[in-house]
Length: 296
Image (cartoon, rainbow, N blue to C red):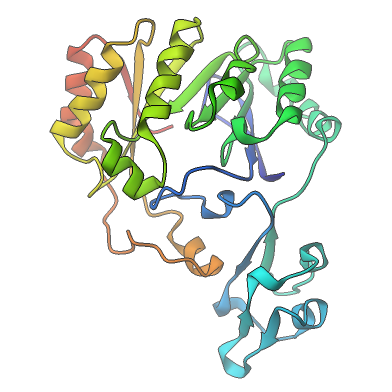
């Protein structure tokens, strides 16, 4: 299941790229800018400010949606029996459905529309959510793209079993790997995940000769300190073959989505990180021999 296809992107790899965003992730990063990507199923977003209270959604899903007068709608998302009934139903676009099932052939059709724009350097970047948690159809898509000689990058947290990573080695040009923290306690508290699994998979991926770029999201209250960033850079420096580290400053672009999904956002009062705050991290990474970049 995917939740977006972004065309003509100049981020997440060289040249002009088609970004495919998969839905579903094993982590629950508390700063996630795409919270609708976490669930493997459909997600319902509701913008109360845009709601005209027409009531069409309540008629389509009476088991879960009711009108609450001037207060808009009351939505019990877990009770929606047939979410597809809500797709494109709301005339004011106050209620939208995130998530759409597409076959490999359908994705290839969408990708091939962009072939004239790729030229020598462009291609496809698979993102998410977590692409490596998508199952056999992801491998099939990678194989089909490889057969067509379409350059494919992948954004991943590597928070999956190694077997799921291994099956994509040789089919992906560049793995853009998020390394969020090396402290297992802090990692588990803020992401519900296992830092050791990510670190072990990163070491294996580099050992097998994959082209890897490490990306460190800089998050206030989580890892935004010289000591913590240096620990991560030092860990990467022990892995042969990784030459590039990107620093991704925390931003607030996804804050509104939490409200629309009925989710709590603990970073609500956190100020976004400015690029000049990354300078000590960049300098340290460069002193360790890494090429650096900020942003995607």
